[in-house]
Amino acid sequence: MNRKRSHPACSGSAYPKRIIEQEKYFTLYTRYQTTHEHAFSNCLSDLLKLRAERRKAEKDEAALYQQAQYSRTAFESQKRGQADQYRKRKLIKLACRSQTPVPRFSNSTPSPRIAPVRLEQLKHLVKIAMEEVLHSRHAKRDIKQAA
Image (tube, rainbow, N blue to C red; front, side):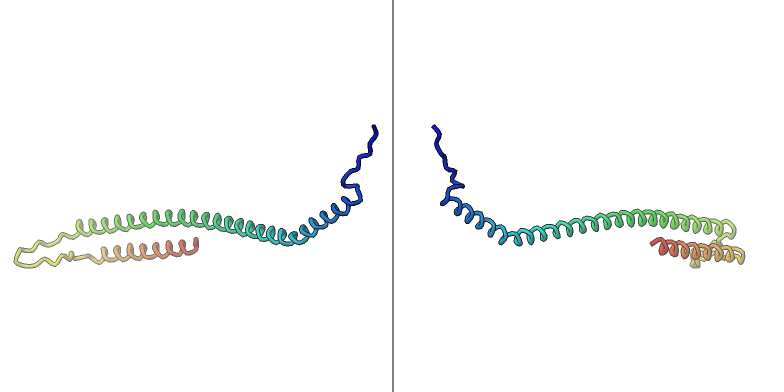
């Protein structure tokens, strides 16, 4: 039994319908191709913007971390400087007290709370004060140069 089976795509009436159907799909594809390309380009540009923002945020975060480290070390050096100044003042006060006795006054006369200072002591105090001023100026300059 050898029957001829006709394939629907090959039959005369079905073949043009298939071509017409394919042409419809092709026109739809070409019509929406630009829409799809536009959507793709928008998504790509959004992706690139997000990557750039993430890179910038990482750089900013690194800069903030570095600035925090710098301010922490600057704060520690400032505390050390303050401790040095306090120690120097304490030594100066002790030196002044040990070298010049403070006169005792009776209760009837008010005590002036100012101890007499010798010229040598005054020179020494001025020298220490000038060194502290120079040291603080150099420290400020170093901080500005580091920034």
